[in-house]
Length: 583
Image (cartoon, rainbow, N blue to C red; front, side, top):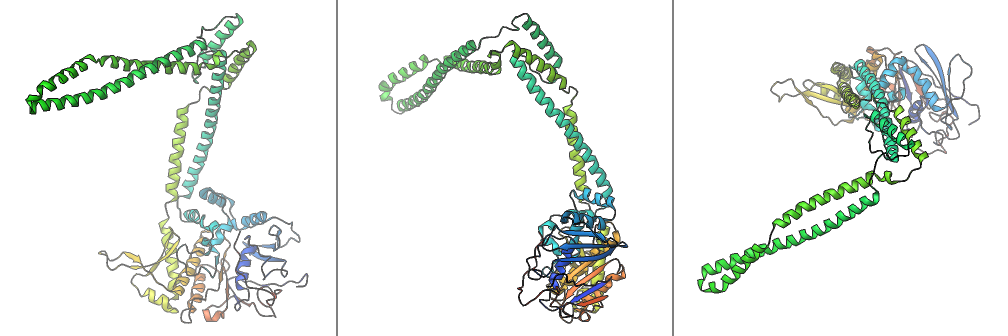
């Protein structure tokens, strides 16, 4: 390629048909259009572009304004955007490039804010390109039928996007979302107050322990705390003790004594358990001896002395003492725990602090209390959180409500487009021969579902799913789905949508009997919208007339000595590669 060389392709309103045999770059052209409108494909290392194509410029008109956009292949962040009348433009990054395109296709900024508020994330024209491209690889798919839904970055956004498109409560939802944001703000402010109060409470209690004041600040007794501090300060100034506190050594001695007593009592308890076990054995022995005497009285002279001895032993053991000891153990444990708690809770009291440290503690307590929000109401915070939860639940419920009439209208439009093909396609004609045949759009799953009347039901007017195995039939229905959606979105006039449909090699699954249906369906869409409103760009290897298409502009990718889409590309040194994945 010689430096400075250029080549141009022309486009028209309506149907643009680019024809070329295999390996002429049809799919590359299809992909390149997405790249020009902001996709982040890495193209510079692909054979079709490597060392042959430096940059590309696209001139387009939208809402009577003409724009020129330029992208470089070796650097995705080297882009230009300008109005056609401007001579120059500044180099901009990819995010800036997309932002400018978004401002063009979004139209009403208020509607875009409404969309983003509803969805809860930054959605713009790039997300809406899911409606613009139908590639060869996913043709014939009716479940989640948009081609780009196979990419995770589009798939995760589709449920929210469809909720927005088919929701009739948008205004109410946005009101509730504003209410929720206000509640979140109030809750955040109160939680900050609560956290600050808790922190102050902890700091005040720490300083109270430094002073040896037993009062605990709980947030509602600041006056009492201050009074205790004043009392302590006066006593400090008079060098008097504010309180006669038990020495920690005395408490530790008490704790040790109680612990020793507990060990003795627990030993008694162990002995008692053995007594019980022995008693059980004695009772069993007595029972056996009684049975023996009853059965054989002649042995009574032997058993009677043993029975009397066991009875005497049983009378000599007092269990009352144990029950008294058991109560004693419980009481001793209780006293020991209280002493331990007292030692731990008063640990700071037995630390020797200097007069200056105590004076500092007094100053800090007063300062902390001055920052404490006494009128904080935890009940109010709880109520606000409850209210927020209820508002969020109402939002979720409203978001899941569908505009059933809008969905029915879309289903009717898709069915109408498919019906147009009945005269030129055996597949469509056969389908409409079925009782009540129609195509239903199912938002859940983003499905195009053929259905027919279920004659087995009692009512006789119920529908059931109708499954067909023809790839061509599915592809034709899928194309009708794309066109039906674009018609609806364009009619609504409020979405950040590029008003075109780009289709790659759609004739592949069709035989000669049914391929004419493609042209019929494509031309049928222009009965409801104008060619200025929707541009269709097709890449295929067949003659347009074979597909029943009368294009507004037809272009061969192999004329004028070109090897294909990129006129500077040399197929002799190139190797075939798959289309790139968007980053």
